[in-house]
Length: 110
Image (cartoon, rainbow, N blue to C red):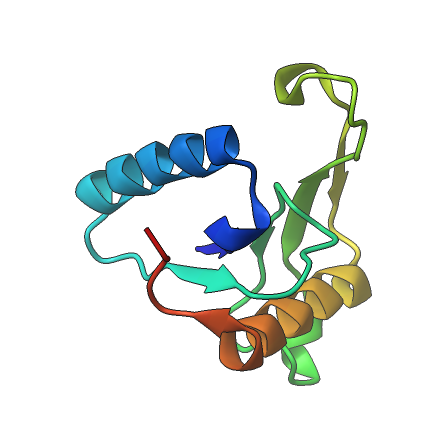
């Protein structure tokens, strides 16, 4: 899972994020967590690319869902976009992989 780095959050959101991360770590001990040091333009995004995404055959399937940014609207009331567009899903996977590898940290600052 990739989160926005706590240094980029308000004090209140930092506390909320820490609680969420702690609960997720407890519930899903095998999941890795990293914290993006730059901006994350597609927050609240889930992608399910095939295991071989990025190859010619891997771009034939997969799904993505993301929340539309509406700052004044609570998350649970925002519009969601769902797509099976193979190029879009592959692009989100590549974005995730690049941020994970080059623009994130394994541990969060407390």
